[in-house]
Length: 245
Ligand SMILES: [Zn+2]
Image 1 (cartoon, rainbow, N blue to C red):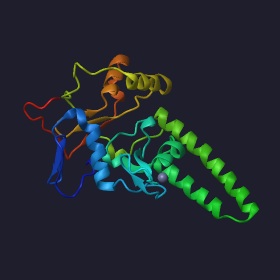
Image 2: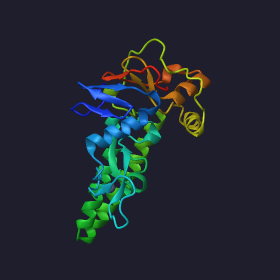
Image 3: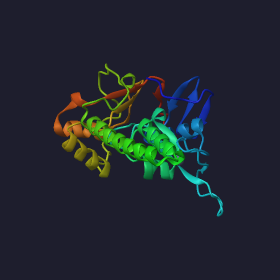
Image 4: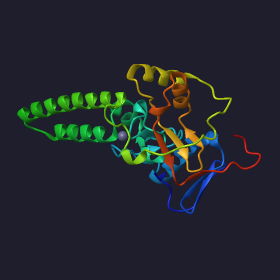
């Protein structure tokens, strides 16, 4: 699949640059920051994708009423939604953290629209009906998410997943990878739901950009066939001489 990129050529500091529709990454350890910067570059930092509330990035002036912008994962990170531009949108803190929770963006948009209908509804009878519908949809959505966690239904769009990645992955065997909190959380996810949570994200020239923990977990439990792979065909890692990994 292709990573969503700005149409024009842009340089993102020393992290990388977009040139003729290709992203060249110059430092592997800033992949997440690069995804953040590109998502904000394309979608802006001044408006919530869901509720339209005005947003700001950074601290702002003392009387600034705008909400702090965050990046929401359309497919939630908690079920394995990758941190790539295609899956990121700017959202206000209350939509992202408080209201949306583990819902996918489609589910959340549906709930928002039902709640809007409820607010505009004047008949008591219709309100009761709508409230019932919202409660029922929430239960259905929870069930759907439970199936996605267990991999009973796909949690990623089929067109994102690459069927044929072979060979070794550069960057997989970095000796200084720390198996920290994230590893523990993902290992718990595996033990509970019997699915490795995060897909591998790989550049077109075979560098592992994201998913180190998934590799470690698959090694630990000896289950390499379970790894989903996303190959970003318009992304190349080009480590310049002297650049830190
Ligand atoms: Zn919002």
